[in-house]
Image 1 (tube, rainbow, N blue to C red):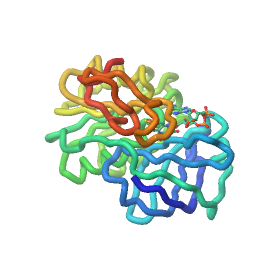
Image 2 (tube, rainbow, N blue to C red):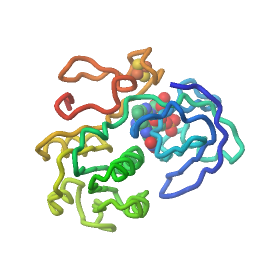
Image 3 (cartoon, rainbow, N blue to C red):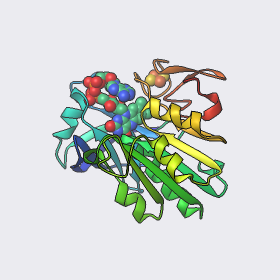
Image 4 (tube, rainbow, N blue to C red):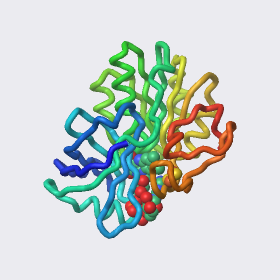
Length: 245
Ligand SMILES: Cc1cc2nc3c(=O)[nH]c(=O)nc-3n(C[C@H](O)[C@H](O)[C@H](O)COP(=O)(O)OP(=O)(O)OC[C@H]3O[C@@H](n4cnc5c(N)ncnc54)[C@H](O)[C@@H]3O)c2cc1C
Ligand code: FES
């Protein structure tokens, strides 16, 4: 983990109430897709955890939805402003667990942390099927970016405005993708349904309200098959068989 100052390079609206912020600063602590940063915002006691969407040696990007006061303040931030981040938190996804072909099932902004995972799997020569679910087409993010990297992309929306009408699990049923390992990230009910409906091994990225974000306060503890675990430090990614929904 690294604590450092980051300069905002851009902060753009990319979907309904959804922004992509690119920040310049050290990224050496980011080792795996699925890790997150914890953003300090002036006037707020607790930091805000956000997944790293992608990064290079000098900058990283996060995608966030405005849901409360902290993200509202972030949405008004301008390029040149400086933020303090804890960077490289959490364990991230295990790209090595997939042998040849992966299914990535994501909902809403769950698309953000799996973006770098898909890139890594494709770079390793593995086949990647991405099934993305959104409430409506105005919420859709990264669809063309996943297609551009060579993933086989399928979509579901609750109102049928993009892809098939229904849930991610409905799209998976319709597509019947072949895979030896799956990864899922999104709202808990979606991930629970994905884990219940898929046979075979996989992992899911859990979300909990966080205090310190780095393993000290135990505020994010969840119960797993192998005992209590901190989502921020032992997760956020857990194997399917460890998760108690
Ligand atoms: C590991 C992890 C990765 C995340 N990645 C993303 C992401 O990539 N994009 C994104 O839009 N959101 C992500 N979230 C959720 C994001 O942290 C919350 O939406 C955000 O903190 C809300 O802040 P707020 O001040 O606008 O809302 P408020 O409701 O005002 O926040 C009040 C407090 O609750 C916490 N909080 C609120 N909602 C959540 C939540 N769902 N999970 C954890 N803490 C919460 C806040 O950090 C803050 O301390 C992630 C959460 C976790 C745990
Ligand atoms: S948020 Fe403090 S231990 Fe996880």
